[in-house]
Image (cartoon, rainbow, N blue to C red; front, side, top):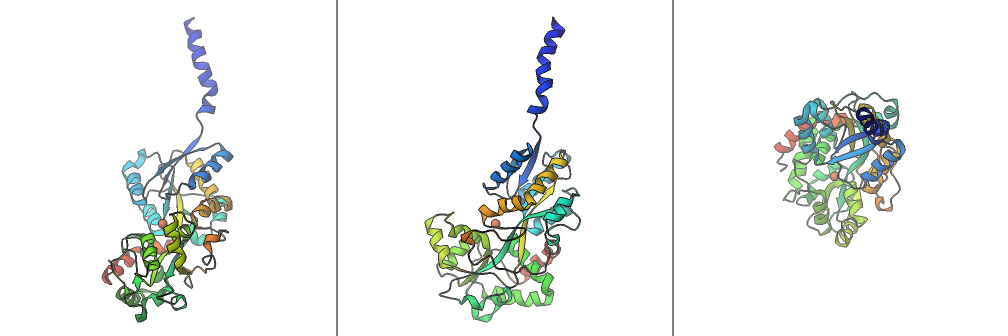
Length: 334
Ligand SMILES: [Fe+2]
């Protein structure tokens, strides 16, 4: 009797184990948007692969990956900002991805030439203006922010924020050290202090006339206009004009496969889905970012959808990150 009992108790388990042990992929994400979950769910519905999500700030995710080393359970890493993802790649945290589908979905400027990360969504570092104080037509480029006419009117986010580091890196790639030094001198000279801790606070300050002009990622303004942060912020956002600089600095959020993923096949499948036209639009739509191709159709993106990206690639942005920080510090960018 005993062997039989043993068998009957094991048999159902053995038979059904494959169905229960659903395939899964673990994602460490520095994108903190609830709406991303709907995109993961669509992927799961289509493939039967479960997505387990760990969300935290980009820096802490990178730290965690480093300390977990070979024992990490992460399969896919998603981070915002070019420099951050490339620094993590250079720290040896990611594996290489060979995928013709990714090569096709992600334009070459938005992916790593060494195939360690691929872009998912795009964001533009835009100029916002209080039209009562500054004419939007006087600030159609980043370089005009250094014009002496704007003394005491420019508000900026703090130096430690990666978005502005990438903006300065972008200008370095385009114009070289000497020109950027001069630009930074004029720019920091125009700043109305204090430097801001976030883009949303900066938009409020421009709306209230504490600043005439500021620099923010476009989607913060779109989100405020959409009422995501409530009525008051919506009113602020509607008082502000946005200028998409000509040409515009474009940054990305991007995905990579963890070097020690035990599940690389599914990890790549997920990234392929997220960067596909459907996946990229699914991530970018609700957050008012731009997908990899095209601009989406939200009415809250009014005035933001016509922009020409400059010729700087995402991997160039990270190459100039250190020099950018150095020059910002030197110019007194706090
Ligand atoms: Fe952001």
